[in-house]
Structure formats: structure tokens, C-alpha cells
Image 1 (tube, rainbow, N blue to C red):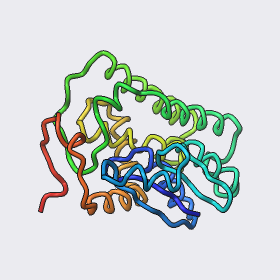
Image 2 (image 1 turned 90 degrees about the vertical axis):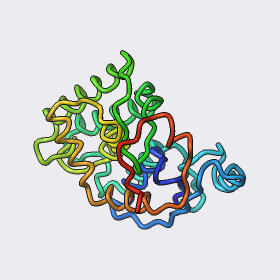
Image 3 (image 1 turned 120 degrees about the horizontal axis):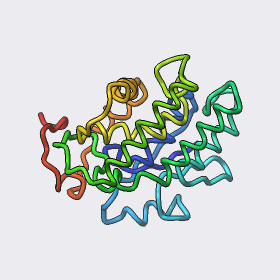
Length: 226
């Protein structure tokens, strides 16, 4: 399998299937194509029919969109419980909240782009931004209460749902958004996850930066300095 992704420092969509594949122990090779370079579009077009990443190539199968890649992997490796094992209700819930983040939370995405290399001061909280992270807190709290008794993740153990929300967790942390104690506890679980830490280590070692993701916010820490 061949997973084509963008900068690990900034690409939330790339992070999601990568975390799933690493956590599940699925063998793959990766190609990182840095964004906003002179040859970026041309290089991505070699692999992706949409001109976007991530994209997974598995023999004759070419799968784009993070949620589609994860669904493909779940079908291909049912024994790995990429979506939570157990009840149909748990799996249905996991898929529903995974699709929700795929198309939702636009205010949060626009106000707080993912940047694993810095910590920023809390931005002005618009009504739309407050609504987004209020929905996140309610969703995570409800999911943990219903399905999370077996461990600290949304469904007890790490699943595709945690991978889908991992970039959101980083945003809440990077921009120091005000959250409840139980939300912070879940965030700390994701931020300490070994697979996430592997991704972050590689992200911080990347040589590329994108000024649009570095400017426009007040930085309070730079994890790439020194």
C-alpha cells in the first residue's frame, strides 16, 4: 500500500488515515508532497484524480478522501477493529461522528488552522467558533459516557473516530481554547498517544513552512526553535 500525504506539520486530512494505518499495524509506504511548492500540483496529480491528498493506492484501487480511505481499510481488515468492535450501535455512532467532522466544524478549521510547530494565544471567540467547540465537547462527553467504559479513548480503545478527531484536538490545544476538564482529559490522551507522537516528531523535523499557517496569530511558543 502507498499513502500519499502532505506536510505533517499542517495537513490534518493526511494525519487521519496515517494514524489509522500505523495504529492498526498495516504495512504501507508513504510519499510526502509539501504544499505550496512550484511542483506541488504536478506531483499530486501523478497519484490523485482530484489533485488533492491524502490518497491511498492499493494495487488497482485508488482511494481519496480521508474517510473513504479509512472505510476502505476497515472493510479490508475487519479483524483490526478500525471502527470499534462490539455493538452495531457503537460502530454506527463512530461512523456518524467521523463523517460529521469530515464536513463540519468549519469555523474552527478556518479560525484555527492546524500547526503542530507552534502554540498561539487564544483568538477572539466568535459565536460560530464557540458553537463548534461546544458541539465537540457535548459529542465527546456523550460518546465516552455511552461507549468509552473500556479505556480513555472515545470508544475505550483507539479507533478511527479518535484518528478523525486528533487534528481537532491539536487545534484546541494549539490555540488554547477554553474547554472543560473532561474534554482536556480526552485531549491529553490523544496528545500522548504513541502513534500521534510519532507523527508529531516527524512533523517537527520537516524543513518546509507555509507562511499562511504561521502568521495571523500571536505565537507564544515555537516547538521547532533550537
